[in-house]
Length: 204
Image (cartoon, rainbow, N blue to C red; front, side):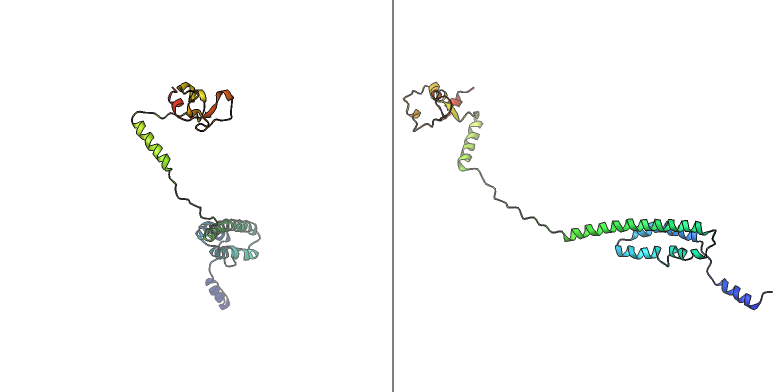
């Protein structure tokens, strides 16, 4: 029969919580950490979570404090699991911290961005000269009648501009007052600025 002191001691022990297996506690901490870390959306929340997962009152902290009370045979196994849990949780926290810092930096740059460019100088849209508009209108009319637009050189020989069109040497249009001669090429060719469209009209 037990003594009153032994009965009191047994009664006191019956009110203590059951001893938690440290390996199971660490495994649970490892399995729950990824979801908890991923749910944090701020650096302040991550700091609080770090204290929850690795602080003195966490499963990792409690196992770490209780290492000295473990059976020497169990210490290597529990110590290895403790190091694994701490490494896994620290890696998760480090990666999430880097992600949150990048998000904060991007958000800050977006909010603090300043447009340093100057407004482009714009000019009103111009229009064709009245003479060019008249030329274009005349061209449209004649093209509509079946004519075609022919183009030729601006500089022409006197032969094509005058001689081939039966313009005599004494014709007033051949004077320098009416025709601009160019100092280019053979002087006998009399290179000049074309004075009419006759030289082009006869081209094939």
